[in-house]
Every structure is written in structure tokens, then in C-alpha cells.
Length: 129
Image (tube, rainbow, N blue to C red; front, side):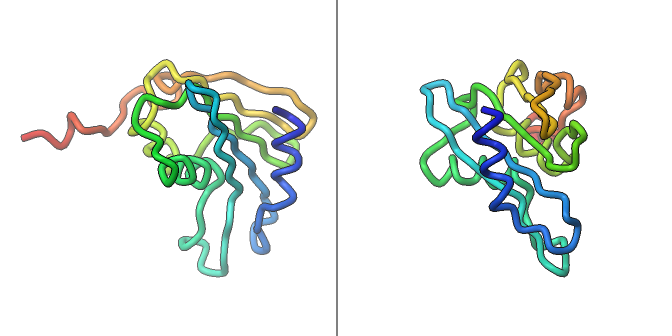
């Protein structure tokens, strides 16, 4: 996984922040969906690597509960967790015990479960009247 994420980092488009991120979503049936972060001068119109990978899966029929794990690498040398916008999408499509593995460029990683990263999610239960 580390080598695949490193290869993906090359395709990140980050002319403003210079903070490349790569992500791979692995489904329970063994499919892989890849994504990188893409930004532009307005910054708000871009997309994070995690959501890019998830959206790729959705385009191919990915549904809630089909994700086994999400792998994320940043090029900066640190280990970073998903931003809160990505966490919202993760909560909506993943089970609470889905693995989120966050890597540094040198291959070190930390494991989280969705329920750890998002202990108080905003989800479909909040929208019920």
C-alpha cells in the first residue's frame, strides 16, 4: 500500500498549498479506488484525496457499508488524519469499525476506526423529524 500511495502522490495537484495527499479506498470485495487532492486558486473548489477516492467508488456503484478500509498518505513527512469535510463523507459511507490508516511518506502509520475519528457524527439520524 505504501508504494501505491507514494506513486499516487505524484499526481496530486497542489500549486498553492504544496501539501500533496493520496488516498486509496479498499472495498470488502477487494476493489481499490484511488484519489489525490486537487486544488485551485480559490481553494474551496478543490477536492481532498479521500473524497476523490470515495467519489470514484461511488461512480462505480460503491454504497454505504461496502468500504473495508481507507488509506491516506501525505507527502509532508507527518501523519495526518482526514479533514472534517472528509470525515463527514466517511461517516456517511463507512461502518463505525471501518479502518482508517494514515501514513507518513516513510511508511509509518497510525490506525483509527471511524468511531474514533468521528465520535459524535452528524448522520441520517440527525435529519429525522
